[in-house]
Length: 133
Image (cartoon, rainbow, N blue to C red; front, side, top):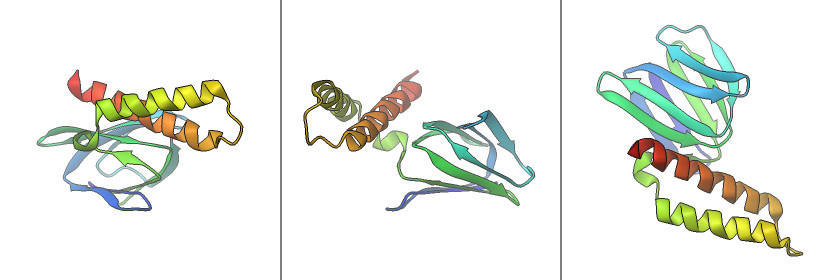
């Protein structure tokens, strides 16, 4: 199977030779194997596990649209992080700052933006912990 993961800014990952992909959809976890029937769903924030003959690769994404058709998988998301891009110290700093802003509830704070930054930082930390364990 082939995989393409895109954000509005870039193509994050293009990969061929996938034997299995598992992800956390809005209706629960699922796995895709070769010759899967056409399938479209929404993904929750989470870690996507990608298996090839060479091994397993992880990818963290925010909420996303997922489609598989004729052994081609497309994931469209606002944010995606590869393990090589994950930075535990930066994510911890962003998490701490976002939690402080939410706790203070200062007037003029864009709470939706702060919550999105917090979710992305927590996802990045989850990816770092998944790749270390």
